[in-house]
Length: 296
Length: 293
Ligand SMILES: Nc1ncnc2c1ncn2[C@@H]1O[C@H](COP(=O)(O)OP(=O)(O)O)[C@@H](O)[C@H]1O
Ligand SMILES: [Mg+2]
Image (cartoon, rainbow over all chains, first blue to last red; front, side):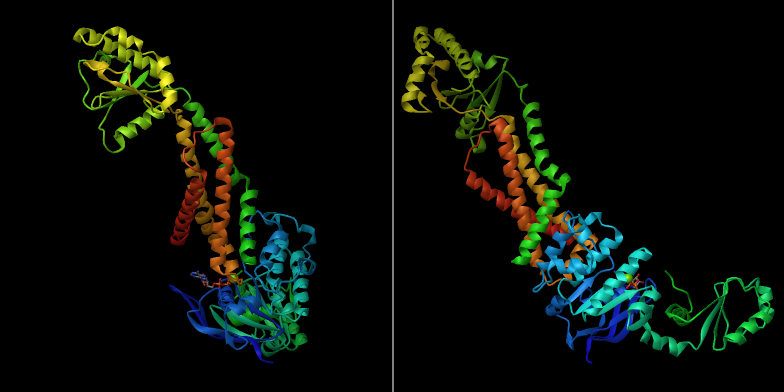
């Protein structure tokens, strides 16, 4: 299928900071595309250039094979990473305000249903909890019946329960065939929601594929982590498996044959307290790619 | 147009629901007007003040009276005879003596007028006696009753024709005019209203826009199909209606208690008000545009 959005060699330079440094990817219609990366990776900058809010220093953004224009703004919904809502008006009035700005908006009842706004529809915007606020912002984003929904770190700062609720909302919007562009620094979120991910750091895309394909490409087997391996002098003598990495005081081994690895570890006489074994996830991939754990 | 009204409504509601701003815009000016009204109710000014046009006659004993403050006017520009007469009409001075035209004038509505006339004419009687001109009895004849009768016939500015030839004050023709005093509050109200309007426009448009830009409301609107022009005109229109509304409220509210002197037409006032608001909003917008943070 033809891509709904395309980004070609996008760049953004702030005085001395190169926030985005040559990013290219295409987003097929109807999928959830994830931009992953730590804080400062350049996710927001990429998304805001795609939304037409920021002017790129180089490269271009195309929507349905045309440069973005005012028509584009009628057909997309946006949730910024941080937005103030107009003050002294209620949730319902806010929705009405934004409904007036689009040609064929959804009825209030419908967005209130989708985003579960009924409990606080008459409350002042300033008196919402974090989760309620994010739901309202999402509701504003889907008012125009958008073909593309941009969500910039929608779950950052929410408690686990609220995050889970929010995920189910995103699933509902996905079910309506809208294309979603989601940024996050939670790898579990990306793995759960996204059909395709681009992993970014320092303004560049490091990897781009379906989450499972990425993992299959980079990992064979299982990840074994030993959080308290004991003192370092002992470690040097120990005969560790060849592909073991030592980082931030944690030994990490990716193993194809778990029985053999475990036997090697036992013979190395390490302190195996707190040893974990798990299937590799995006978090592991990220660490492997960037050589550091997430700078949250 | 739908967008315009949506913005207009949101902004106006924001104003009405924001108690703090509402207080400053409505109650504060009222309080200020009343405050001034009471603070300046009594006047600690000299007992009498007399305006002088032309070169004063040094011989007149009247000019030596200590309780009288003499104010000399140049007779040109805003100190022209008409301007000074206007001051007399508004009770800013109690009497005008024009040595050039040999006339004096008092305000019928003023309590001080008759007293000053008496003093002035008493002086003239003396100088007459000294100069051997008119009989003092003739001067005595000029009683207020007569003058008022004459005045009712010929309207407000009927010049009294009673003066006779001779020297000193007796040669002065008398004029009487009427006019209610303009109190201090009558001057204060337009100022307070104007001040209120200026702040309301500067803050309500300029400052709010700066705040919207800082907290991201503008950015959110930029992501919608609404044009900035629609947004700005809606902001300005909302503020215009608010300021006209609050000014009317403040004026009507204080007027009910203080009964201001209103000279001129309300329609013109409204026009000037609207123009002034438009100017102040424009300045607010320029300030908002120039201010980076
Ligand atoms: N307006 C700006 N001026 C200067 N530097 C900026 C600006 N906005 C972002 N940056 C820089 O660009 C980089 C990428 O930022 P951002 O896109 O917000 O990252 P992310 O959303 O992934 O956390 C950061 O180093 C940030 O400091
Ligand atoms: Mg960001």
